[in-house]
Length: 389
Image (tube, rainbow, N blue to C red; front, side, top):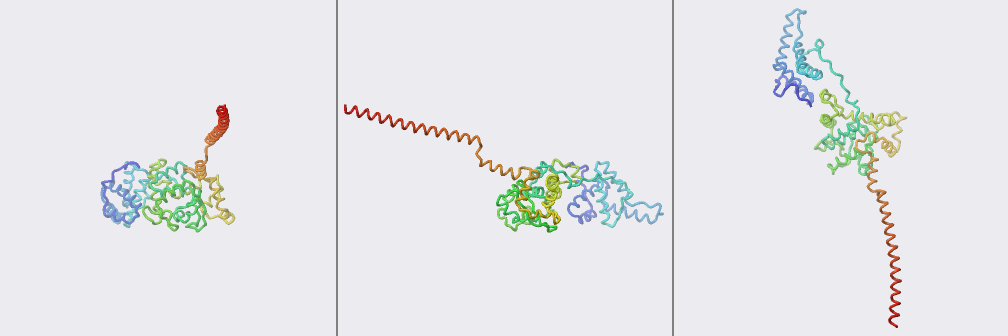
């Protein structure tokens, strides 16, 4: 991440500000604390002083003719905006800072409008779920993940098209039969958590490979145990726990710009991975089948996919697995295993040559044995004649 434009490490917040920040959730609190430290750096006084300043100006308006009224606090906000420009903060950071100040004022019952303040225009935000994921990018995402659980999740989301809720609802028993039988692509069957729609989809070799590595650390896993657990705990992983780790990994991805991450853009999210499943298959696989694999509600006529034999659906998925594979497909994996058991042709030729050589040697030995026996009989005859002479 880029270095801070202003050193805020020595900046302290007064009790008025801290009391307000206690009402915020952790992620918002961290962001707003930074924003309010910027305001403290600019203003040079505690936030309580700003509240008192607004109160004083508001009371003063009561003694002025209406046409001489001032708008309490707005000049300071304008100065705060100008300070951001001078220091070099982005429009997004500026808007975030004045938004934090406005919200802190609101907490204390002070309403301040920006309608008559020239605020910076925010840059249009990229949509997190519209990132055009490439296979090398997915591979990098997998490789920067620190934990096997997260590697498995990334590949499950990308290769199955399922939502984070559906994936985290899986128990070991949901995949045990096919996993222990070494069947790939591996089928996932059940019902969607959100809609109770039947689901039937697959994950390929890559996901199953990392699943095997992950489950090595859980040798006593049982059918009813969650497939994905909290780190260091047997409890089921939560949406928040997975999303937090994915956000952490986003800063390690070299195809994401630091400025975009700073401005809140990151495709390293569960929904973006799910969208990538559809994007990679669109225009290649039948559209209704894509929706079926993603466990979306289909009309009665289209729901016939559910009636197809599982292995026929598996064969269809396998035909398109290369579009979702970052290491190797199930078919490539099987071919490699068969190659280990298959004797190369040049070795077969050498073996055949050796067999011919052995056969010729055997024939020569037999021929030599007969010739030696004949010579021995002739020698005996000569010795007998000599003995009787």
